[in-house]
Length: 200
Image (tube, rainbow, N blue to C red; front, side, top):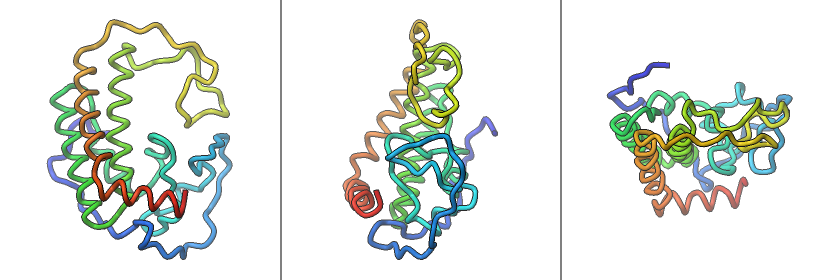
C-alpha cells in the first residue's frame, strides 16, 4: 500500500444505491464459510464475488466499522486515501474521504457514503488505539479463531496503556470531527434510516 495520499479523487462510477432506488435483482447472495457470526452484519457473504454497487441489497450498515475492508468496489475506492500517521496526514486524509462521501451522496450512492463514513470512523478508532498503545497492540494474545473480524477483547486482557502519543491523539481528533460531520448530514441520516428499515 502506498504511503502517500493520492492528490486527485477517484473516478467513481457511483450510482443510486439508496433504499428507494433499489430493485433487488441479484438473486441469492453468494455464501462463504465464515467463523464470524454476527446479527448486525453479513460476514457469511462471498465478498469476493459481490459488487455491492451492482447488488446493494446485500449490504448491511451493521455496527461501527463492520465490513469496512470487505465491501467492494468501495473499499478499493476509499482505502488509498486513508492515513492517520500525524495531524497533517490525518487532515488531508479526512478531507479527501469527506469529499468522496459528498460525491457518493450527490450520486445517491448511499452504500458508498456509508463506507466513507466507516473509513472516517476507522481513522478515529485506529489513531486512538495508537495514541493509547505504542505500536497499536491493545490486547494480550491473538484474536480467537471464531472472533476474527470482530472488534473487542474476546476474553483477552487489555495491555497497559502507554503515555498518550499526542501526535496520534491529535490525528484521532481530526478524524472524529470529520466523522461527526458526516453523521450529522441530514440527507445521509435520512438515507441511513431508510436503508436500515428496508434491508437491516
